[in-house]
Length: 183
Figure 1 (cartoon, one colour):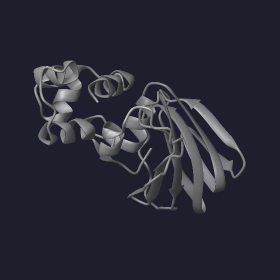
Figure 2 (tube, rainbow, N blue to C red):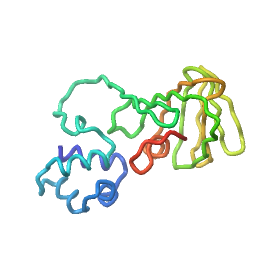
Figure 3 (cartoon, rainbow, N blue to C red):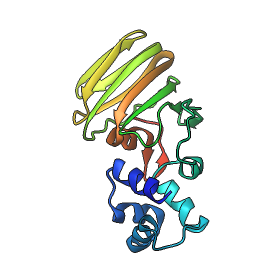
Figure 4 (tube, one colour):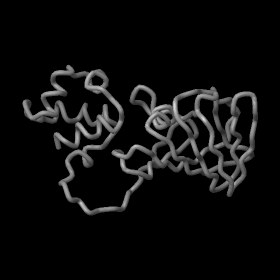
C-alpha cells in the first residue's frame, strides 16, 4: 500500500507538500507513511485517499488483482453526470459525460494540456476562445487547453466521451477536491 500511495502521488504529479495540504496532514507524515516509518491508520489513510482522488478499495486492493473490468459510478453536479472510465492511477483519464441543456453560460477556462472528446449522442457547443463550434453526434474535437474553452449541450441532452491528462481531470471534474459541473 505504501508504494501504491507514492506511485499515485507521483503519477498525479503532486509533491509531498501538495498532498499533505490537500489531506490536512504534515508533509513529514505523508513521507513517513510512504517510507514505512509511520503506521498506516484510517485517520491518515482516508484523507490521503481523498487527496489523491482515489477510493479506499483502490488503496486496499491486493497486488495481483486481475480484475480488468472498471465499474463506473455516476457523479452528478450542475446538470452534468460523469462516469470515470479509467483507473485512477493512469496518466490519461477517460470519462463519459451526460450534459443537460442549460440557459447558464459556462465560464471559459484554461489549463495545461490537450482535451479530446467524442459526441455519442446529441450536439455539443464548444466555445473555443471567440469561436462557437457545434460538434454533432459521431464527431470529435481536439484542442489545446491553453485556449479559453467551455462546452455545453445544444437543443437537448448530449453524451460524450472525453480523454484528457491529469491537468484536464483537475480542471474539468474537480476543483479543490470538489466535483464541478462546468468545463
